[in-house]
Image (cartoon, rainbow, N blue to C red; front, top):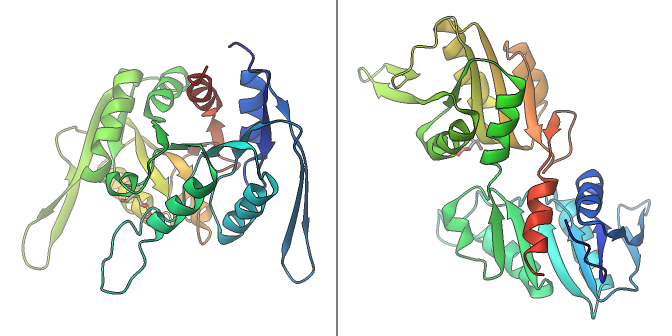
Length: 287
Ligand code: R5P
């Protein structure tokens, strides 16, 4: 990839490894940036930005991440900012479900776009949320997940835990050259709901459940149990964004999931697939 000499990368507090990978991939330097947290919980940010063009890499997994990003933006006054938000939190509140509610993703989109000249993110949770952005380029991690699966597993079935993730799974399966399906919910009676793969027989097969987000882990635990009951030989779980709220990883492994793998949009022990090259490619498109 060709060098972009005038740009530097600022590693946000939530994405140091991915930020460094993006910088390496583009052949760019890393900005000198100092972070502090005061005893009362307030943050301090100081950036020595001798460049006009700065790429900020900061996932928004928590409220602290939002505050730090705000301070980074403020410190970068007069710079052109490319905001790389690999995981864009708050995207589940993408409309008013009840009168008087804030549309959280709209508020966050306005905040980020108020400072940034370009915004790059990975698999936003909903289509709906994208309409609040004007400068957003979204990267789909499904092709690289598919390629990674192809290189790391033999003979497996890719399963979406619900119809909502079916298209994503279809894309990954194309790159993995594997069978794919989704779990379908059928109402048998007023009391009974049956959840089974729509068409594929998972008996004695290696099954990989793929979703965009694992938050509490509830969706994957339920799907994994069903697939194990149906005779799957081994069940794995893969996701883009490893939110892992409330000890989700413990729940997943306790439920019999063999291994959990994620991308590095949120940096976790499970982050075996990097989206750095895709982000670097999108940044380089400016040239
Ligand atoms: C749902 O629409 C998403 O694709 C995920 O399935 C969901 O966010 C996962 O949440 P949890 O891990 O809490 O079940």
